[in-house]
Amino acid sequence: MTAVLSGELLLTELDRARLLKLNSAALRELLDDASALPSPEIPADVVTMNSRVLVSDGTGAALQPLTLCYPAEADPHAGRVSVLSPVGAALLGRRVGSAVGWRTPTGARRELHIEALLFQPEASGDYLA
Image (cartoon, rainbow, N blue to C red):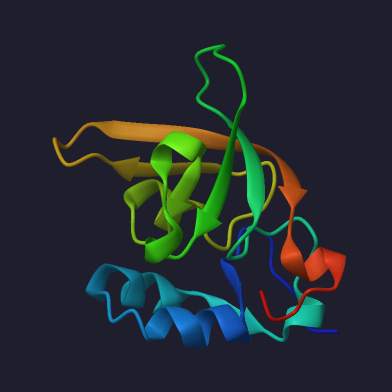
């Protein structure tokens, strides 16, 4: 098994290959900074594509479930966030317990805390999701 550093951004090799095809400059920078592992080696607490996470915003509001998806499957009202959105890109490759931040189009700083991973394809043996 590959050694993983705490705080390191992790992706599956398959997610990295698929995301590179989206040809996004902002996403490419994130992908360049990430370590890619074979799907079976991704730790079960890492947010991968098609993962469903439970997040909090630190205000005491109810926990919110979000699913990280590809742009064509995005539906923010249903909690399906595109990996090309600021919040989606911030979640990708992060571990449960992490705080993730991004800037809105108006420049405001937002932050979410990843409380739990409700579903991760790789943890359930689905290496092609």
